[in-house]
Length: 439
Image 1 (cartoon, rainbow, N blue to C red):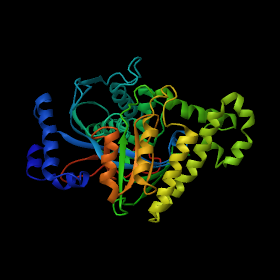
Image 2 (cartoon, rainbow, N blue to C red):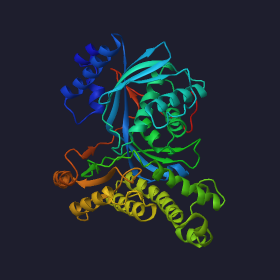
Image 3 (cartoon, rainbow, N blue to C red):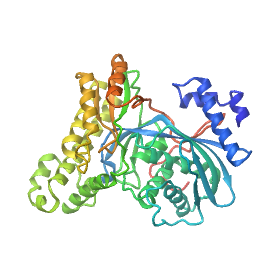
Image 4 (cartoon, rainbow, N blue to C red):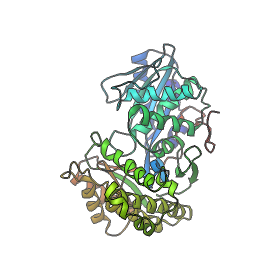
């Protein structure tokens, strides 16, 4: 593989995945990864697998209650060199992490005390392949990650997608479709890792491009690919990391789907999507008897869900029709709804730490009514998202990094490819079928 890289045989697929880098940089990253694998695990043929991070464009906290989202794969990824191993053990070394992840894949049930760990995800993904009658087995992998934990680009879903891709290529001939891999990753995060989440992250990382997703029927989610170029519209997409991590905020995240689902049950459904397109007026007319049992916040969060669910369709239409001004207007409305109704700008347990509202205030000051900004992803801490007119991009980055830190502002490009193997005839898993199961 190293000889193929040096001969330029991988230049074309690498250029598609990493358009903002020089050829020397792209080759160097892969050669270092291959060299590290050889040093740790000995010589032999390996497979190169890339899984992107994701950016949520619309649909803040809607997917877990059967709602709609608009999301995109981005050009920051996890890249792995992997080789099959016949001993049934997975060993993974990641750049920047001192310890080796080792998992005995003969044990495929959730292990008490393993929750919240990378080992839990690796085990959960192998279990998901086994439940579907698919191949799974040991492997040795070295990972170079650009989707950093806490970056708001869903490092956990990128990791799940990467491990699914490795199991797919090494033990299933690459025949498992992307949406099946996404479901396996979602199950691993919910059941084995112990974090309740929706399916948006895994589908966005696995499938690539900008996708309108509808999770009303989780067994057959609606998936529409939307073609839009933010750069051609004169916009730079940034995320700004506020310096606060998500490590102690699982309870805050878990409360959002739990409160929404509790309100849905009180009104005769299982999830909010089961109640149909409930208007704000209709919800408020039913609010009085719910206040004492569920509290006001559950009602406000439900109001956000229904409004955001409708807004996602309009956001997708704006991109589909080439109307960036309308899209930005809707982004601003989405951000306002997240702040006022969903209330995920900061953790109520840490009211003195309000990096998200501070970053939004700073972004709005620079944008001065142009572009748009909003909370990005789960919220409570982490990142904001900003669409910045290109002529303001340099000043935006400089101003935001003065407040937070150098390197806190990252430019994102939409990546058309989701989970892919990188080789001279690079491609990915089969395009997903609607609600596909095993191939």
